[in-house]
Length: 497
Figure 1 (tube, rainbow, N blue to C red):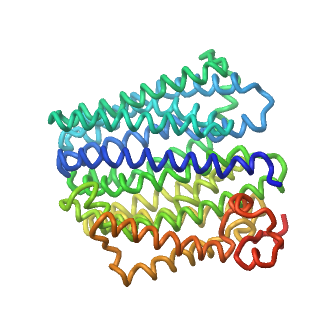
Figure 2 (cartoon, rainbow, N blue to C red):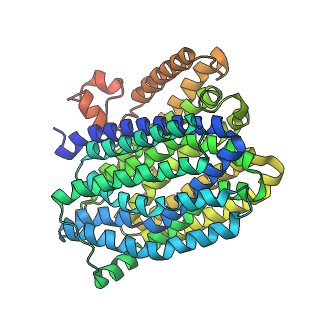
Figure 3 (cartoon, rainbow, N blue to C red):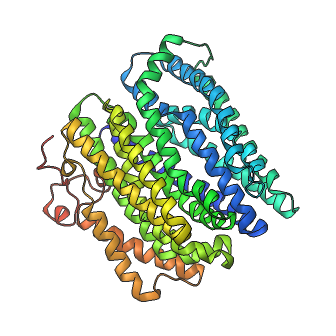
């Protein structure tokens, strides 16, 4: 029989992914309205401001959430004290980061098509997002994904409603930015009220704990800061070397990718309490299941985007954003690395080798910045997308080498990309002759997704690419020869722990 956490894991993941799909859809609808109403150039300022704010939000996060989740599992300290100290430390870090954010934004973008006013508003979301991350980590450790889902959907619903009203009344883009920030603040207030009923929260400062926590999180934090600027360096460089119209096109690419890019965060947050276990056999088993989910969802995401890139861009932004289709098809390849890299990062944190992450992310940042700076002037947003894809895979190779050396884990001990790769290629091969990945209607697009999804699932199952927790829900006895032939088997039975 599956263990209790194994029984809950597929359900909590399903709830989280369903919430992510819903929030991404709501966000995409809001982006569509703003993109079509304000045009590519004006909408590009919002995309630029959002990327800038996200980079600094990650700075205030400083890798703390993963350490907090690990400590909630491994430490004997009560959760009230750990969560309260995490909030107090974040508040202190924000006192430094917010002035820096406004100063850097002024230096870089004060002359970029009035972008700084939008940046100034969006930076307010930095402390809000930083505090929200603490509560999301708390919900994940207690398998309360349903509560987190309700808050995420509620925030996006408020935001969409506000944006729709403003667009209908032809209000300026600055007011839309205020609505985005305001809806996040309302959600944070509601989460604080709920958690306070279960956990006694205080903002009392503990200097000794803060120093220890910073020493522990510093390597993760530096790596996270570098990764944050790496992830947004393409947009930031476009804002400097190109026009806001180009940034607007690229903003649509990011908006469509946002759902898929957030999925690895859901995975790692759900699995962190399991891979932080002190028993090697248990955390290795959880790691293998995590990687199986990551490969399946990663290749599945690539299939969805390749099939529907042209239709989705037209649906959510209009025909005037046709230039975003090619970069979207290119950038979606980076999703494979975007799924695996966070999983490997979470493993590094849970096993205490986080100090090795800094060099990896620094290399990724340097490669991405240099490559983007070289290709943007000549190849525009398509070259920007290729540069980002290349640097993503460099990072994956580098962190695999670190894990192999520090944890004595070879990639073949926990990675099985072949089933998902074969499923992705098979589904795309069947769909290509039908319409060359250019559906012309919603019905046709949905039909393509159903057909591709069915083929993907069949191939994935036959090659034993389903996560073991999913297999345990479908069948009770994997020792049956027929079921093993159909792919319901443990592919790791001959691998040493």
